[in-house]
Length: 130
Image (cartoon, rainbow, N blue to C red; front, side, top):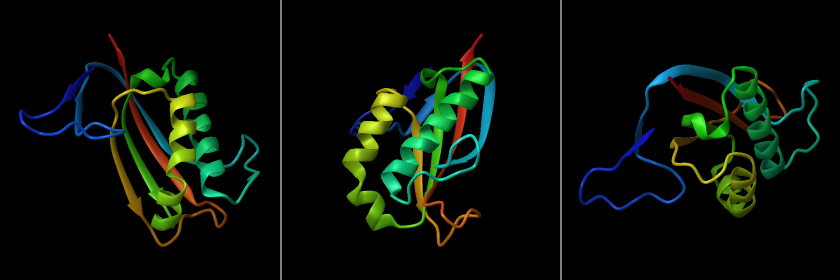
């Protein structure tokens, strides 16, 4: 995997502007913050984000991938302010579950998600090297 950073651009904090990779591509559907039995343990955004990340790691493992193979994430959150306020806790969960890898990342505020209690949904693309 190669992080793409144009000359003269400052390095983004916590993500990459772009990533180039070669290998087997794995695409995850949006992961919400419920457990394997589709039950929410919390209504707090940070707790749901932690669970959604753990769910992504589990699905990646089922495909023979690891967190370091993640090249792209898209986060959909229902409350931008709550997301920013929980940034430190979300960052801690990210580092514990995913690591400090450079991932192309986008975060978007949406009015609602398909699951009523869901506050975050995370899509993941991974590339396992040949």
